[in-house]
Image 1 (cartoon, rainbow, N blue to C red):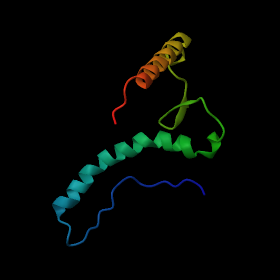
Image 2: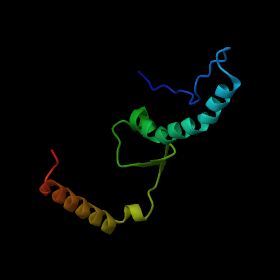
Image 3: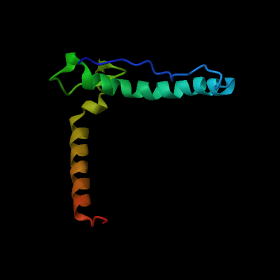
Length: 99
């Protein structure tokens, strides 16, 4: 089964039960909903795109493959982050856990 795209605007029934105010509020909310969907688009694309099957270690922004910044490619920074992560995990595992 392939992926499916969904238009990110809410369904707005234009029946007599809906006032003009409710309709306007629904339209005003649409940009906020669109922003959330756009925020998830790259993650969803990377999870389901058949052309990325079996690939990893790539950086994507707005559904396009990009080169990471020079800072993100710095081995010294990567090593420091790894060591900090290990230390924090170790500290967390030694501290008493709430029950």
